[in-house]
Length: 141
Image 1 (cartoon, rainbow, N blue to C red):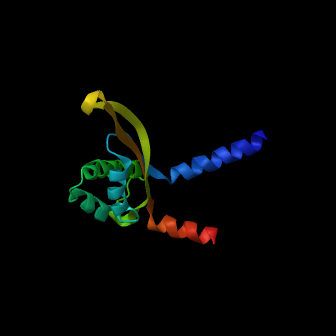
Image 2 (cartoon, one colour):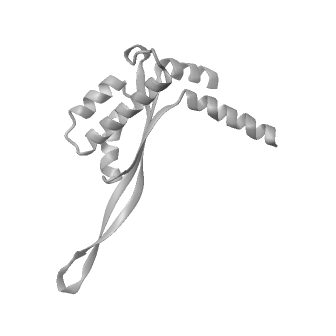
Image 3 (cartoon, rainbow, N blue to C red):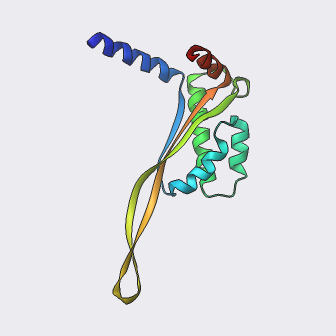
């Protein structure tokens, strides 16, 4: 059983070498609002995604732009000497999960109180190159 565990660990290690991701944890925006912006850049080329985020008026856009730049720098750390423009990088996956909620009290009429839920979220962004994507599709088919 130890050998199988080691093989799986080696496979995961190899997969991580070609995975370029960045995570944003506990971002103080509701997940629903963040998903609206995340949907705009899913599956889009990196340079086009940066332009979309730069000119979007939503509050979540600058945060996602910074996250995308972080993912690009993670790609550059693993692929030294290569240019981003030459490798057709695109946003392979981006998903928004809900984070912790801070519960607060707002005073209401006649001595009552209403609960306010201040939501936060976690965003995970994964980049891929078009070459890898076509290679992965041919292997699975």
